[in-house]
Image (tube, rainbow, N blue to C red):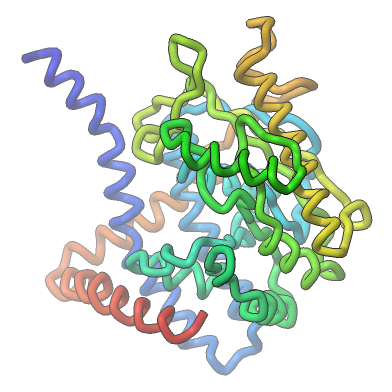
Length: 365
């Protein structure tokens, strides 16, 4: 019975972080909504500047839990610039924590508020978050034949017109690499073989459409493309087979001791403009990712496993960058919940904010 209690307590370590992150969402949406109304008569640039600052506050709080609370070691390889840039961030995709990895890099460049995502269309229905991600400059896309290129270009052009700083995160695989769903991996490899492309082991065959539209639309606005490869330590079983990457819940339960992140900064002049050639280029970039991950997971020499080649930096995030945001949002939410009128407003924000958000994203992209 004691063992059962210990195990239950261990597995519940995600509850507090999840409660705070979800619990402060209405407070954040109210603050953002008030600014949205106040800035309606101002140039779009002013709205974006404050919106980015608000987003920085919320995501800094999120990083408090995903870095400071978990104690995960973040190990960075390659060439991450210290200064913020307008970039497209291309990464392999294996779990929901991948979204947080982009935040981890962005905050180290003081660009956290600039993070915007290209997301699959179904995520726009998330309560509060789905609507807000769109308002913050995120782009929802449908897969394959349903992909709306014109819609994506128009949204990106609107961001450029408003001089919006851009840290656009794209996962070109289109879905997560999951060792527990071998059919998806097999189908991806079959498609690559059919198209005369190299067969990949630890990543899926990338799709070029969203990447091409983003680079082509913003080629005169961007400073670079970040090619990012992520590996989570502890995702190999006792037989040496790759396991499922940690979910957000498992990550918050401190089940991932280290995250390894390899960054390659690529100049726009080194990327082909035509979609056909960019498709080949993107696949070659994923071949490089695959080789890095083969070295990480499968190197014959055990001393070379669980790390990428080259120099690395153990990057620790200071509490000064995260704790103030937690205290600020947590304090605002607590003060709201202390009064009856505040609690009513809180509940109404969840309910009506979700309904209005769903209505909004069903009408506007």
